[in-house]
Image: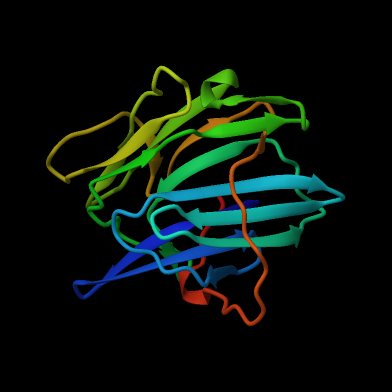
Length: 203
């Protein structure tokens, strides 16, 4: 599983924002981009051939860019996922913070290097995060262009969306027609530190 994105973790009322990438099951690595609340982020994972993937992330609000080339000989490239999730630590999923709403826009995938389209161009499934306690999260429907949706926090007493993974981390849209996601770019940097304490699970 090839992943890249941003995260916000709350500890004792202090919020830590960072960007990361991961070639699961290897550790996640923090990447040297400064992330702030409200920033607009563009991210992509692109299969470039010969078991190699280009992972990329850009902060469109600040102009920061990062890209890295990674190898994965076992990747099956069977789905593309856009995920808002609770992080995990020590093998356990952490409580979900009240992040409000996250908007995903212009979500595109490419199948076999030729067939490209928005999420709605492929078979897709929306999954809601349903926690045993604390905040949950719900996924909206797709927009008219088929590539935009949002994920919103639901308070413990506020009711909310449909079924999902109890205690799991993912709220996502998944294409299941073996697409290759095509919207992220990262450049390699030496000396990156593994996020051992913030390791993420496969969804």
